[in-house]
Image 1: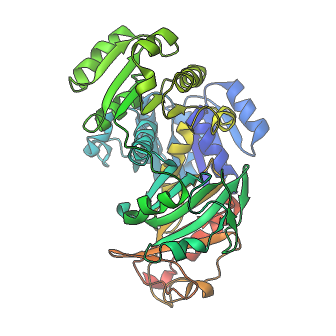
Image 2 (image 1 turned 30 degrees about the horizontal axis):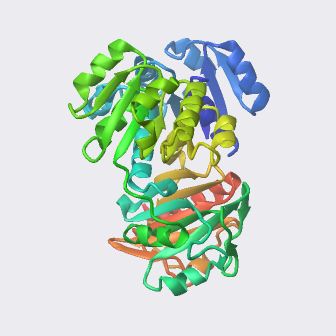
Image 3 (image 1 turned 30 degrees about the vertical axis):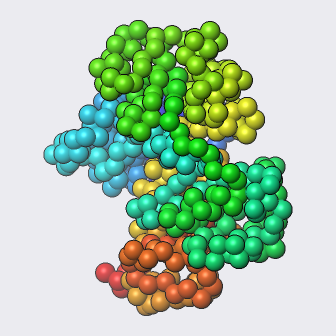
Length: 458
């Protein structure tokens, strides 16, 4: 695909990194020449210095024959205008805009053909908030992603010493829970991917990625570690868009305290959140403030400011002072990988949480959702099978006969309301939601082709 990306910031860079590895022809546009130079030195792409809301810049970038335009600069207005130009002047087939304001998200009519003419909106703040809400709901998990409208979950949990499955082979899970719909997809041990064979033993400290019917998730977690008590008391450092969205989303079931440095922002937060939420004007790295606000009694401390260093420091402080669990928003991937699993329980990358939403629109075939798992080590796709045995490479075939590339695995099939854990003799039917796990990005194109129907289908 020929792809134009407007914006070489954190999101744009992350998008470019992911798509360039799949042999796409990518051009990145930005007004900052230094950023573009760094990108061109690291990645096989073209950088163009200029303003993406100018017709001449998009023309020079090759918009006339582009397949996809992704606009992800800081200003929502610039992204919307750039998409409008790309669509109306250059007839780019698909345009995606990154927005921060919920005003645009709440009024989809503005994105219609007679409006900004944007095919898809992505909102990093919304993606990150949704991601964190699942971690609040299942506090034992390191990562939780949904498929098939929430009927199936992929969950990563760290196995604890003394748990029923510690030092036991994977196959013993089926013996212990004969009625559970579950499949262990991967084991991460010391940052290494361990193939999950039936006789592979789960060691304490392993990160176990399993796919299960959502109804059975709690039951399976109890086999890997003790259940954590429900999250009731939450402290959020940072009252920006993410902090506000999260506080608003969990205030019904949790007691929430928000620490925000900017006084005017505090006043705004007070008008947006329920009266039972406590808004504190202060610095979350202030040890005295954390002590005064009883951080030791918190079930969960979340550092969600826009500053990586502040998030790391406040999380480390909160953990040292007794917070049961801490989660930090860390933009730099190297920082996140360095901190996670030590004093910081979970490090969340905003770009990683967003990239899955965007990849959904880039994948060929009818792909419903895409998720990056464990810092991009593996990717999960939910694709809908269409056609029949003549027009499709998957419909009417047993999984063992589909010809998946080595490194790709079908984890489950969702057929209407029925969840089927995949076996070698499972036959794929038309309209099945098929959940595929891919160990290497270079295999994505091969998997996509399998789910594309031939021209005879139409």
